[in-house]
Amino acid sequence: GFASARIILELSGTPSGVLAEALLYIRIYFLSIPFMTVYNFGAAILRSFGDTRRPMFYLIISGIVNVILNLILVICFHLGVAGVAISTVISNIISAVMVMVYLYRRDDEFAFRFNRMKIVRPYLRKILQIGIPSGIQGTIFSISNVLSRVVLIHLANLRLQVLLLRLILNILPMTLQMHLHRQRSPSPARTMA
Image 1 (spheres, rainbow, N blue to C red):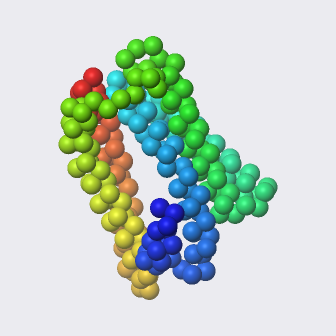
Image 2 (cartoon, one colour):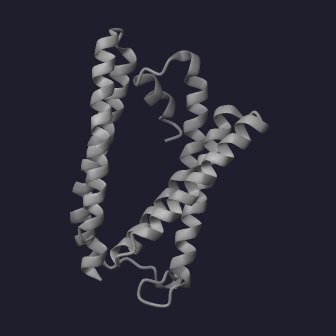
């Protein structure tokens, strides 16, 4: 991530005037990826036993913290893009900590304990069989979203920009619907539990 950030930004057509700030943002933002991963795993465990509200509340809380920290770090401390990225990292840490504290406090088969962490090969195989296609699908969707934004940036014709913007806005409800459907469907973790 850190090494390829500049190349990706240049390939995506980031204007040279904002390249340094975009690079700074991405490099700070990458620090939050482990915490986002922890949150996503923890939230998946919560959803696997039917608790979809708690992950949502954790994201609402961390989202509010993100907005408040954005205002403080950008307006009060004049950190600009770095302040926005730092706010994002802190809010991702908060959501990860909240989900892990809740799982640690549980006293059932869903409780998180470091000493119980291990890879069970038959379960890993089943998870990968379901997770890899899902990950590829999510990656393709993300790449197509980025490419459509790149095209939007480079188009000079205002009508085409408006049409592409409408296309992107039409994708948002589909994405929401897809995620809501995913919430209702049984997850691999719940199936195996």
